[in-house]
Length: 196
Ligand code: G4P
Image (cartoon, rainbow, N blue to C red):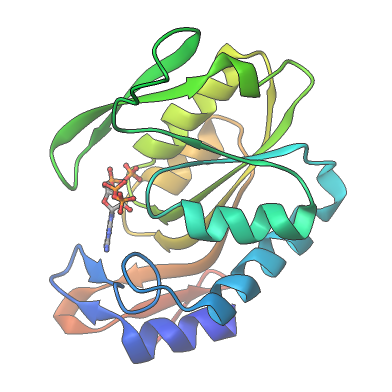
């Protein structure tokens, strides 16, 4: 997605060779016009899938997932990472370990909102090791619903998440794929060819 590549180049800050800071447009301040374009792109990519629900994880997945759900005209359901006062029983739970942050989170979703008839599109802001996407997929599968695909805004292709998800049989669509963050530079993967 050219718009996203341009935005990453203009606004992204390479913190080190593993981490890209995107707080100007994606996970702190949000550019609504940009996010609307992200949602349209995911809706187009999965238009043939008869999606019934978009599922993500709080907090930074919510904005792109919301725009996607709006385009597809289906509900958005986000897994909680923090215990809710009211969400105490009848929940699906999974443990998601973050290698980046070196913490485990218990993620939860109310059983009320996922059904065996659901055909789910999982959306997230980043794909690194794939732990969040796998955790969400396991929750969808606990409900005996189907994972129709996984949409990612920024994939760090030098980390193993994409391959692990493909090996597990999931369809993965990433709007921007980063081949490397080395030497303070963002290098994109384009049609499997490295672009400077
Ligand atoms: P994984 O799910 O693919 O295994 O990824 P990982 O555990 O490594 O990511 C954990 C958190 O770190 C996620 O946010 C993810 O969005 C974020 N993250 C991973 N790589 C980067 C990066 O290069 N840049 C930035 N800015 N974030 C990155 P989270 O803990 O769920 O936080 P939030 O959604 O509440 O913001």
